[in-house]
Length: 50
Image (cartoon, helix red, strand yellow):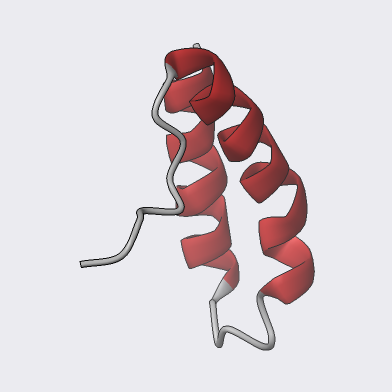
């Protein structure tokens, strides 16, 4: 199996999640995400960042 693209440290994960959160809504249409799904993702990101 190839190398994972997920960060391996908490500090790097925090940066990755913050970036994901800031961009997920702009890709919602391309990913066929509903507003509720985008909201769920951003809420989950907030929980991870804390």
